[in-house]
Image 1 (cartoon, rainbow, N blue to C red):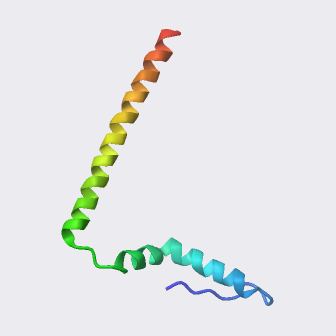
Image 2: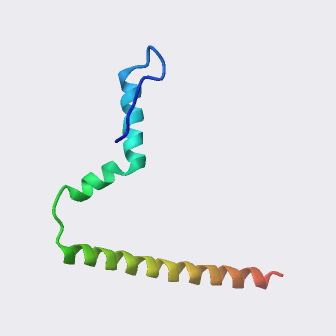
Image 3: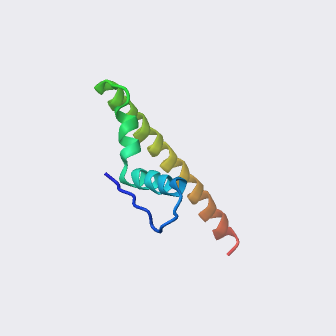
Length: 78
């Protein structure tokens, strides 16, 4: 658990709260709490992972095609 102590004598509460929030964000506490907020059935989790993988593969193919087109265009002008 992140701890925050005043850096100097007159540090405001708002600044300390901001530092605490940033530390929690870095450690991943906020993300974990949001994941556990509602129960998600295993098949829903699996489906979401598959969809994300599918989307990633599609984007990678699209990027590769664009890079190939750019490569061909630059070769024309050489």
